[in-house]
Image 1 (cartoon, rainbow, N blue to C red):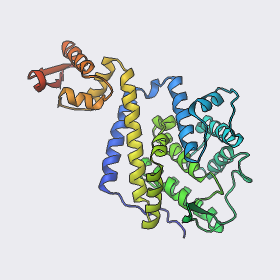
Image 2 (cartoon, rainbow, N blue to C red):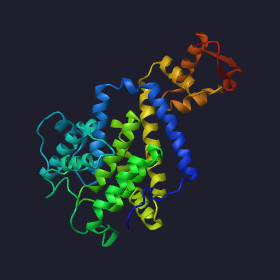
Image 3 (cartoon, rainbow, N blue to C red):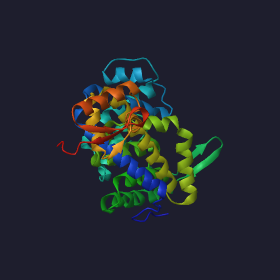
Image 4 (cartoon, rainbow, N blue to C red):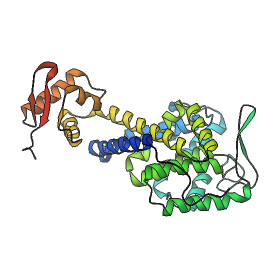
Amino acid sequence: MMLSMRPPHDITPPILKLVSSISEKIGAANTLFLDKQSPQLRKQNKIKTIHSSLQIEGNTLSEEQITALVENKRIIGPQKDITEVINAIAVYESLDSLKSVSEKSFLSAHGLLMKELIKDPGKYRTSGVGVVKGSQVAHLAPPAQHVPGLMKDLFGYLKNDQELALIKSCIFHYQMEFIHPFIDGNGRMGRLWQTIILKERYSVFEFLPFETLISQSQEAYYQALAASDKAGKSTIFIEYMLGIIDNSLGNLLNVTGQTLTSDQRIAHFISLGKIEFSRKDYMDVFKTISSATASRDLKKAVENGVLFTKGTGNQTRYSLNKTIK
């Protein structure tokens, strides 16, 4: 089966809703902290991403052990697991040199990721392969002789299609998993390449550990892949992955909300363009702050002339002082 230049999928209401929600959260991330991420936060997110992606593949090393390897310390553990982590660290340290539309970059990344783990890292498979779940063959990949052509088509789609990066990244992830171009390492490559596609459009995705949520819902991940196989199009998988991305961004914003000053929180909330709102609306954006903190934020903004109020007690409503520039 050869892929068309535009792999089959539908744009459903859930997909449109998720794209809108994700876009709003990306805007929030840009407003809040994108250019201010501390080296420590970036390091922690990289460790979480590596840990989650490899845990899905059965790696047994803990976040503490991966942290030690990132810091060039020696650890005790299965050699294969250690090699997987060392390889993943090398790949994530070279993200900026990998180009999403480059098949050469793609093969180079696989070569790094699977170094000393398989016979021919960085090369497409030359034999048949299937995905086995229990005693059943869950997916029989296309014949090996079709792989180069299928992957060429898939990279052609990345280069030429005008589709949103959010949707395109999900489609690439699914189609690459369907083709299963490598003897091993397909899952981690699908997740890695989705990150690279997104990172080129939105830098917040560089070390956003959305793979943590995939690792916590592995069964749903595999079910979405299987359901899309059965349907002959990637719609169900797109909905699943966009949900994962939306939740991951939400988690990142919630954690960040705790570390902001009251002025930063107010500035971000105003940037969302809400005309009139309650304290509850404010806390729905900053879910990790207490009601007392929310009240202090809003009171300070009123005292500074940034917000107006009407009503009292639980009926208090806030609105922006439009004379403030």
